[in-house]
Length: 310
Image 1 (cartoon, rainbow, N blue to C red):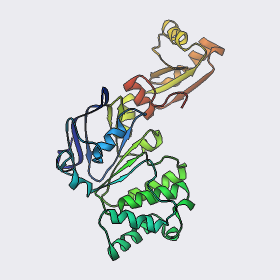
Image 2 (spheres, helix red, strand yellow):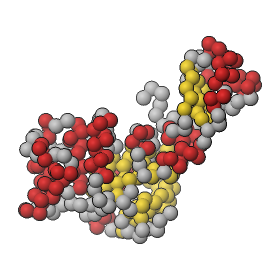
Image 3 (cartoon, rainbow, N blue to C red):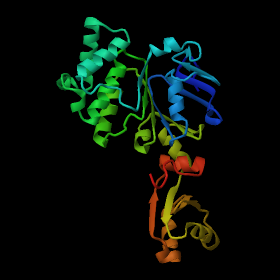
Image 4 (cartoon, helix red, strand yellow):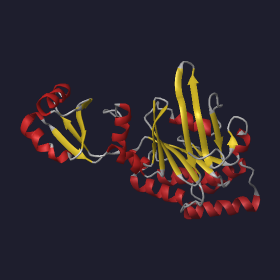
């Protein structure tokens, strides 16, 4: 783990409560400078609370955190000038033009005059927004609006930007454009929260949260490779009974997740014909796949990241 001075963010033993409810419990992590770091977790996992702490919106009540080498509890004012924050909820005026929104955003950071206009022009160009600079934000697509939001958050040239659910409401093409835009910023450290598996898989490093605790950390590939083998999922009418019979008849350990029976093992394809032959029409659907980040989450927590009805 990087030292507090080396890391963009370094946290040790962070805790936070809302009354009796524990939102963060002994969170320890380190984010290298210049990387894209994702925080993956379901609603209520603590990722939004952690985001608000790092954005200096909530006071630090437990643990130690340094942001860009500064003490979060003591140097929060200095930190605010060196980070950018893009919230999940829109923060643009739909009746104003793209340029006017960026201009007002820059003025909040003390930018003025020709320097502000030069920075606006640069961000419009990098974001592919130059031709839309005079358009009202309300006339833009969701993907373009999100790019304007992020351009506003980068105008003051922060060293670190915090993005809360950056791809909310975006289709896959718009999401791809958004991340190309972000990665085009040299030396920028990006921290983002998400509940989307494919978005989390594109991070350089990942912290997985559940019920306020860190349940896994590492690169997406390393986390998936820890599981090894294959993942076999079976849909059937009686998952509990089916899982029990797998143990008694085939000697296979299985886990029940809602309407699914789940098996993790090496060379899973060799088990498929045995299951079909043994249980026949009781198998309503069977899928075999390599481990995913969802599988990592299940292995660490015993439940899905997103509920079956979501």
